[in-house]
Length: 499
Image 1 (cartoon, rainbow, N blue to C red):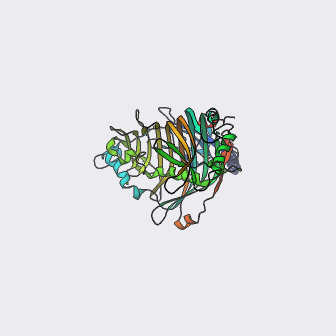
Image 2 (image 1 turned 180 degrees about the vertical axis):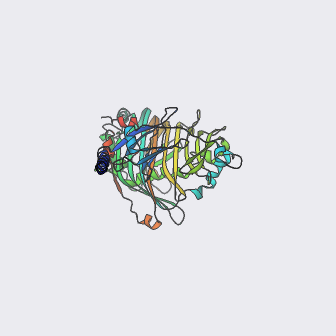
Image 3 (image 1 turned 120 degrees about the vertical axis):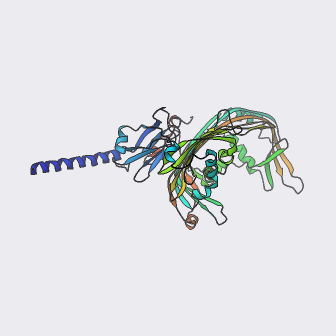
């Protein structure tokens, strides 16, 4: 018996050591696990699936096609991951199990309201949706806070037409050949991606004005050049700016419309030789993107602000993070333009998740006045909030839109001298412009961690003046080694900057 006990202890010790060594080898050699989350029945990828470790809530979001990449360097084989998508059964798996097969199938599960409502008839879905904005101030986090965020911006600018009909110029340095050079050298298809990892800070001042700061940890950008060899063109623009003295300015005029312009080369001034950029412009852009979570924009959130334009269907109910929720689908009723699905909490009518896009045959604004056109062709939006200390805060958001611009007008560039009654015209460049551009842009924001701070702490945070940018010609997984990010799309991985 004694020998058997010793043998058993020895075997147990060997198993434990082997397991620990296996975990250490796994952690040291396998930095990321990559896979795809799909609907078990349809086989379609599930976009923006929430994936997190149960014991510490560390996690990621799958991308728009359901692909994900998880940093497992500091996790054990026995740690459990949860894959969560509203309206689907949660799926739990250990890191060790995920290593065997990283592709995950989720099974749709929408409960009938009869299973979830003990008393009373199901409420009217439109009345549920109306209460989202009524209860907004009570449900969402507005306190000062710090968020660790990963942001991905993508943009593709496709110039469909570019014709410049030179008429005249009072400047000797500018003639028809310059504009022919621009027509030939401007890139017709311009693409760029930027990945940003950093901290975002939110607060309100005593007057209730929203405050925002952002500081980078790591920034990577792939960007095409707008032009080819355009040093001569840049020099002309720079010289025009240098020769514009105090109380002089340039303006662009077409018909009865005119607008002052700044000829200074912002990209040269604000993108410094060492690869850094002034942070204030990125901060301003991101402040606008984060406003998407406020539901203020009535164009984007029309189905919350103008419920009379939509038909709502109460599909059923489910549970999200121990909360009962309504699942509501909506489509246009007449003049509405969106279709999608809303996930709204039973108890407080908080909008927890929304996925929506233009309905078939619908578009946004379509304006064409006096040869200037603007059309919103496509839009997709998705947002998810998590509850923390009785308040909901942003977990992720994504927006994608396609917009077309066109100009077919006679245009004059005028240099003027300020005077008391009428400004004096000094120089004029006149041309005809036929320009058509299709612009596809998207932004994704993943909030990795949220911590509440005080207004004093917010005020003490100093926003950096510059952010260092790593410019690359092609996406490389090693650039984000050790970080959990949104998995890039196949297009991003294979895209290479044009030589």
